[in-house]
Image (cartoon, rainbow, N blue to C red; front, side):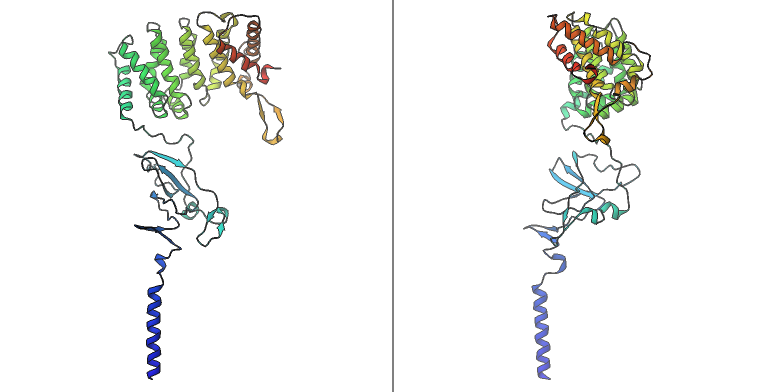
Length: 392
């Protein structure tokens, strides 16, 4: 009996010592990462809200990941919509969205498991991710000084009592044009329909100074340049924008400088949905061909207009003349270009690519004979003639 009691006591003591020596499952080094001041899970545990992702944490696939530009740290959450009105979690933050992780994930046991062999967090949640938009979220710039200049410039231009002849008005347009190159301010200008209407009115008012007219157009062109969100907004607020610009271009009182700015604006408007077709319907190709006429070479300010015309035609139409058909491997297949598709069915004699190529060749021949032409226009003409459509 005394022997059994001794054995029981020894087993109890040994078990107690082992319990103290072994870590509990919640603090296992396999599941936690501990530093001097904190511990956190080795594998990130996502929730519907964004949480900080530590540098040495492993991320499951299928998460919505972002980089907080204010702190420089990554944050992640489940990639699911939070409500019917969309995800407003990014409001008030300077953020850059980081692409979803699709590479293989290292499991804690050292084995590698591909994403295709496991369910992603989205699949487990049973909810669809929010619709993707290639425009992205454009956050306001942090510079309050620029915001103040933008607001005051817009207010002055829209002021009924403001005179376009004032130096202050000209300076406001210059400030607005400089800010328009930033995507945020470009969108702000484009969605402000009263501002767009006022700028177009200045552009078409022959009584206004040429600098005011040219700058008003430049503000609009800079706002939509390489800014798809701004282009979409300006079309929503003013669906007949292409018609407005073409009417201005038809005005006989329009100077060479104003024409240059109008063609610059056209070159970006035409990238909007359905706008290239509308441009052709409005006989835009014919009008530009008249302005490009070789007889204008060397005339007062006309070389700049000719260069803009050549740039517009090459960028909008000629660069689509040849492409690789994905069903034909590497074989170059002759296809109807975007321009020819748009022009199909149009009863036009001068506003087509054949006439444009002919005009480019005439200009090139005159240049070879030593006739005057600006270097910029000459380069554009040479570039146009290098496209297959003009080599047939």
